[in-house]
Image (cartoon, rainbow over all chains, first blue to last red; front, side, top):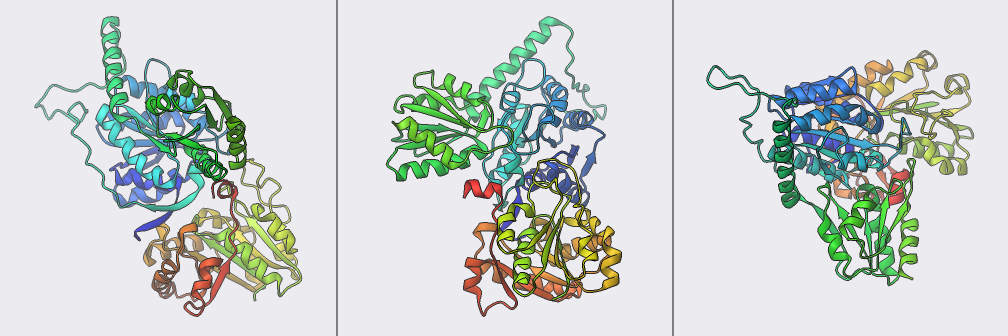
Length: 350
Length: 223
């Protein structure tokens, strides 16, 4: 392979997962993520892996549960309606403290919605999605290169904290083609002494389960899980700041919205308006620190989203409502234009 | 020039851009030119994105009524048989990716083979991960050929890294294209390169064909 290859975002996720040692993929086709499955179908048989198109999304996520229990790196991918179907299984993964990767290449909703890009599963992803008290680690790439790198990161974090990670992309990230450099290092997967790999009559058998009928014990499990979440918040929050040092206006945006917003920030700077961008890379844990800092020197934060205003709630909490936070959005599969974001910046600067 | 030119290849090899540009080139020599968008694999990027470019040049677009409507169904255009029935029409066929996309040619195959006035071109790109070497490219080629039932007649070397493509990238792909040509026993019909880079390669590459790139709806927003 050449130093750089030209890949679709969906293909980059698949190849990066293979690079991370994932040899089990279970899925069900849905636009705009189908290339993840198509790519895995071609590659897995050649490297001794398993590609299985399950009979449904629900079956696929439960196959993920099985392989994760055996301690192997495993993934599934889908788009919004399919992720809702996987919700129960994701909750079970959380309840059993199993590391796995779920990829959501979002499309417009609710319901069957459309096939064009959207970011309207922000709440679903960052709050958990299924039933019960839990979180996933949610990573939001904004280039095809990041689709690859954050997929590897998602596996590493999942193993490190025994959590399910989600790569939250959207139709543009999945479908767009950009050069990718896949020559980056991947740390080997850690030992998993808890996995159900067979005792060989040498140890007590391991149990992987999300059922816990004694309330005192279930309470303890929940509290211990949330103590682990605090560690993730402390150690793993990621974000990018762009031209924020002297900014008067801050944009908050992730994924494709951040790509569009960066253009708008550059254009605003050309016009003498000091705009900057804060791009959360982890959506959970949410990066509070840059927004708290921004609130000390900007006069407004504009949250640019492909939804009716979801991340804006976290931006308000993080900035402690010290400055106005406004919304600049398109929905239903539409993407805000750089001009629309620039207009919002100009308006805020007056 | 043959009456029918089919453009096939791996996902994302650049088929639609090439088909649109070829149709524009043919239109300079022929009065009645059509481009048929028969991609039923990926509903995201369509020839219809280039509607203005085609209309300005008086090129007929044969495309499903559902293209670009976000309706995620694999529908074929009702007037697709114009390709084989209208013998005065010069046609460029933009076919969907891989063997799955090529299946669509089954319907037109009898007419195309009987008339026998066609070019069937395989688009290759060494910077795509699943066609990064000659052997894997020919493997994809055989799968496509099996699905379409129409033998390839030539190769288009469209090796590129998107917007970042340099003249060196193109030059580095020439030996790969030659190797594919040898393995597949097919001639290299042209090397397609985006306009600005093509200027630097005049006299250095045989069969150089500059492409006016047709940005899709995503590229229009972020570049």
